[in-house]
Amino acid sequence: RLQALRLLVRAGPEGLTVGEVQQALGIAASTCTHHLRFLAAAGLVEQTRKGRSIACCASFARIEALAETW
Image (cartoon, rainbow, N blue to C red; front, side):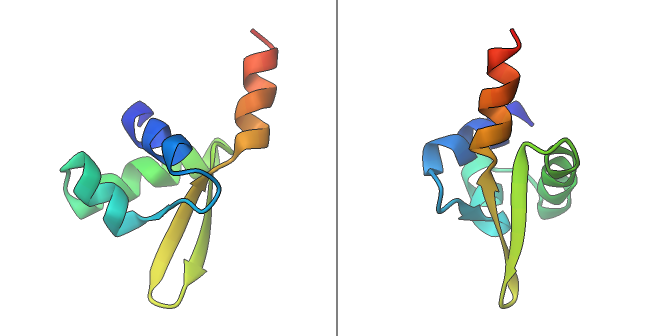
């Protein structure tokens, strides 16, 4: 999950599709979807449907808020 989050942070505000994340990490599609779902539930990733694919981007405001509490 941490690798996926780091990848999305590096991708910037435009983010990546689930398929792009899956290819970059070299994991199965179902595993990728599972991890991204948990990150979205934690508020660290935002997901939006774009046609037939789902775009994911890091929730920079939430990540910054968490970093400030440490």
